[in-house]
Image 1 (cartoon, rainbow, N blue to C red):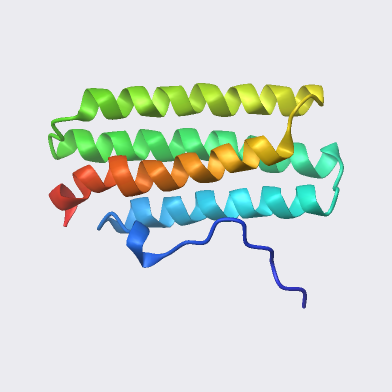
Image 2 (cartoon, rainbow, N blue to C red):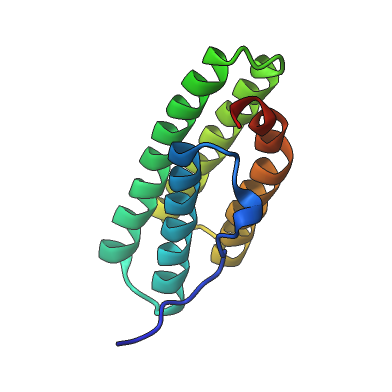
Length: 133
């Protein structure tokens, strides 16, 4: 059995004290790792596009769930958080389109995904984590 490549590793420090959100964050990390591994293995579009499509759709699902949860706990910075989510969805869709068009920079795209998710969880999501635990 071949070991999986890890580009972005889940750590307990990313926990936001909510089982569903933590699980979803882990799935996002796993999907980014799957994309990274496929790019490193120089897999073709037939393999890469479904992984990227999954990432886009799952990101939207996760944001919808997270937004419902933080709305329910009356998170005071909800508006700003929603804007961050919308910007990420747009950026991810832009990368997906570039990916489909074959004009993407895989290094830049992967770095953006990793940096954005780590920053978003450790900075933005941690601000509401105290309301959940």
